[in-house]
Picture (cartoon, one colour):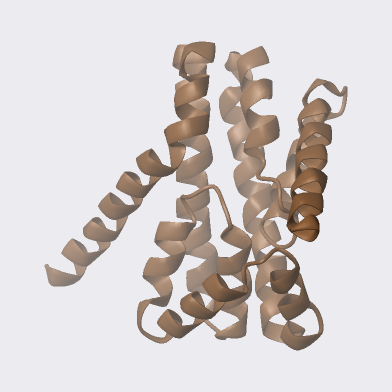
Length: 201
């Protein structure tokens, strides 16, 4: 029991330090760094910076979302490479370290049939997108399709947060932090439904 408690304490401390970067003079650069790293190896999502930054400057919320999207997609390419080229050496220990082994095995088993849909759905949810990026590389999923799906889903997720904060500010902060997964899951269902409809027409 000591090890999980210690890990939880470390994550809590890391989250607090990440949150503190929102007031840094270089907050925008840190936002890009966190968004990039979270897509491949970092445990804290960029929302920890995006939310307070957008609340402080709602007029720049969409700019912050754009930075998150671009950095996250580029970071996703790194995650893809980790899964593709150095899975046993780097990806497997990384996944085990975060306790994602079970979920990763489940994703990998579904990739042969549902690869694109997994990216579309999980790309909208807060965490753990790194599992999707690494699993995509490990499955040798089509890189161009992976990148396009990442742009669509990560962009939709971050711009949703930015738009809510731009128009409603602090009054929706609790909603975003507690129910964002539900909202983005509904959006993901709509995205997948749209793709299926296009295939049937």
